[in-house]
Image (cartoon, rainbow, N blue to C red):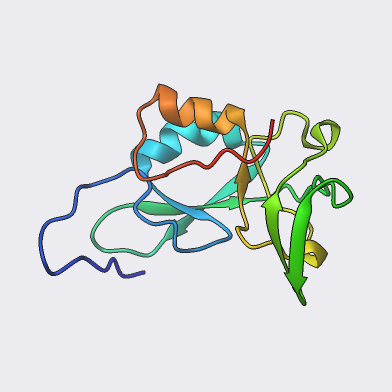
Length: 136
């Protein structure tokens, strides 16, 4: 993996250096150490080949049929769903910290995190992610 930097100036180091991969997050060693325990049941950490620093991809393993399509507002351009108003099935999400929706739903966005994940990121002042509140 190659890190591409902005030629016009310096970049501020962050704990999540990139979120350009829609199905996972890239994280530093510090982030891995902080989140490993809370995410151990929900994700795997894949080392990335990079000469500049140790990086991992957080790959969510939980696939939850948690989007309530009857109560959500969405449109689709086959095969992708574009959701405007999300309604999730809380009983399906349970205590998951991070998850994907089933492939047949093909929702733009890819990775979903819960308050549990957000709380850990905020508690440890991890940088590089911006969260958008979708439900609850």
